Image (tube, rainbow, N blue to C red; front, side):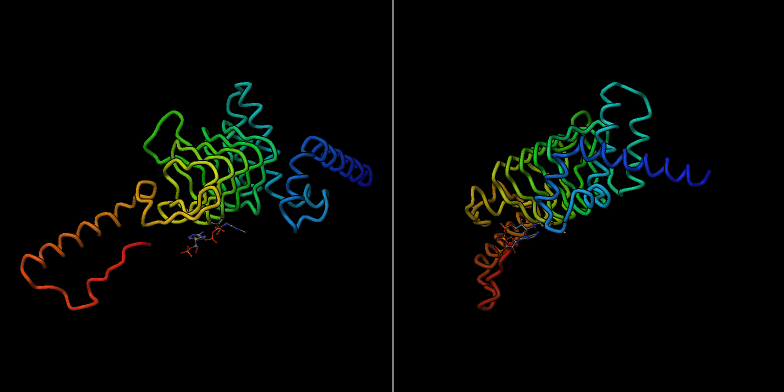
Amino acid sequence: MITAILIILILIAVIKILTIYIIFADDIKTIKERDPAAKSALEVVLLYTGLHALVVYRMSHQLWAWKVPFLPRWLSQVGRFWTGIEIHPGAQIGKSFFIDHGTGVVVGETAIIGDNVLLYQGVTLGGTGKETGKRHPTLGNNVVVGAGAKILGNITIGDNSYIGANAVVIKNVPANSTVVGIPGRITKQDGRRIDMELAHMQVSDPVMENMSKLLGRIKTLEAKTGCEAPKGENDVDFTI
Ligand SMILES: CC(C)(COP(=O)(O)OP(=O)(O)OC[C@H]1O[C@@H](n2cnc3c(N)ncnc32)[C@H](O)[C@@H]1OP(=O)(O)O)[C@@H](O)C(=O)NCCC(=O)NCCS
């Protein structure tokens, strides 16, 4: 009896693995290409929580599209319990999507993700808390989002862009850009470095702007009162 149950369980597991292997062949190939640590398809199917989360997402998204009540959200929460990755069933995700390491990734209901996108652990594609309707980001094709980065609000990240680890992005990012820091600043575009001091339109930072204004007022006061700071103390640099 026990042997029969064991054989049935093994058969179910084999069928499950084969089904995932066939249906998610593209995603498995992508993981093998993008992660040098992935040695075989079997390893990817059994060990990669990013793939497990994607399998759960694809099922819950289909149920969501069929307007089945409750079940899609429930499935998505089960997926979160097992993988630490929460993808809302309403999110739209393209082909060859890969979440590396996984834990702590959150993808919101109205997020749209293009093809060939890579997210590392701790990434949030979330809302700012102030918007309704389409309130989560749209990521173009071939976007890479570094560990811990947060992309917030109904903004667009252009194709082929890199979002640096731990960046917080709250404004649109043009295609072919690299963004780092809080708030996110474009440091490279179309392969060229962007001079942060000259790119204030793209990288406005309210703290830096106010500090610059204060410095200007101090300098004016010093000039008016004739009481200048000792040499060297005026050379304040507010660029981050
Ligand atoms: C942003 C990133 C893609 C690098 O892009 P790059 O074009 O090669 O950038 P560079 O290394 O030339 O760095 C450009 C500048 O940004 C800074 N920078 C790079 N990454 C940064 C980050 N995540 N946060 C803040 N600043 C960063 C660099 O120090 C450099 O500053 P400098 O011009 O003052 O010297 C990369 O650093 C990154 O964050 N990748 C994410 C990887 C990841 O999450 N891995 C997890 C594996 S488990």
